[in-house]
Length: 126
Image (tube, rainbow, N blue to C red; front, side, top):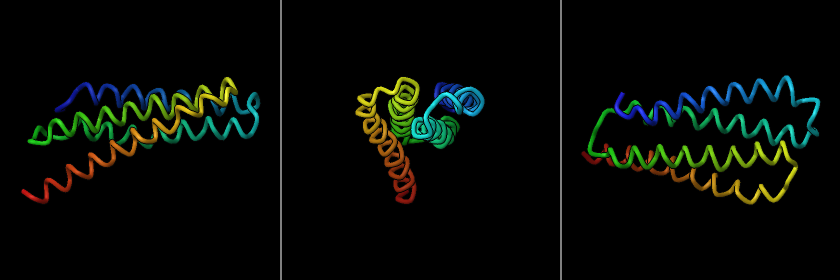
């Protein structure tokens, strides 16, 4: 394990994604409107999708791209918190203004994927 912090954050995120998904399916499905339930489910799905590369980055061997690994990992963490967190809060509160935060999380996800692609590109050049 090369970056235990990223692995720990991935494990916490995965745990929470399972817990939030189960909570949504069993407790919230009948409490939320279909539209807000879909928003909640989107948050759960995106949290799962982005927990996987976060775990991967925590397991990448040390290399000359170590700073890029950390930046990419933290971008995924920021995306999970901002994108998924804002959608969870929007679904549970119904406050539409929270949707203004969601694109910031989307940008963080894009940054994480872009940095991951850049690391792959650099490895071809070696």
